[in-house]
Length: 207
Image 1: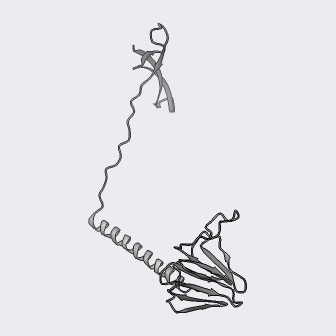
Image 2 (image 1 turned 135 degrees about the vertical axis):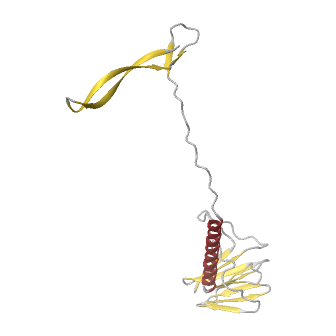
Image 3 (image 1 turned 30 degrees about the vertical axis):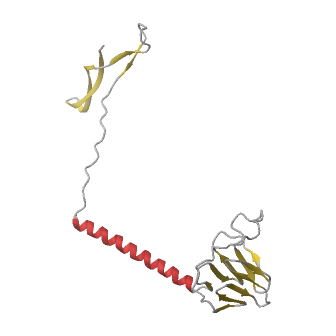
């Protein structure tokens, strides 16, 4: 059903009595209101709900970039890629200057830092000691040794593999108090006190 509603609108204009004055005018406007029952089947139980038209905004049309714009975008992407390659190459050169090396098989890598030598092994057929409760990270595949003490197992979350240059078989590497010799059957490292370790895919030894 439809009802008629009365609304009051102010109408302002210039009048001889003053610079600005407003009168009020009653206008009658027919407003369409739908009355729907609140509870179907029960007379008198109804509520009114005005329905207004809702218009969604229309998105702007897609504009394809011109050929010169596309060429500039491609050139910019290529420049970013070249810069990224240059940064990676620079970081690799910096790693090569550190006191580190790896064996020709890429299975053993060592790094000397802050008075300690650390060597990791990747593939091995032996099993190291069980991980202690105090170590929440990797354990049983890495040794750490000071310049005078005996080696100890390393609790680590990173790796010393494939850092620095290759140490060929038969060559010896020196860094501070540490000396490592690479052979086909494994790697042997010692400190100035004669303590050290032997690492290979088949076995290990601490002395």
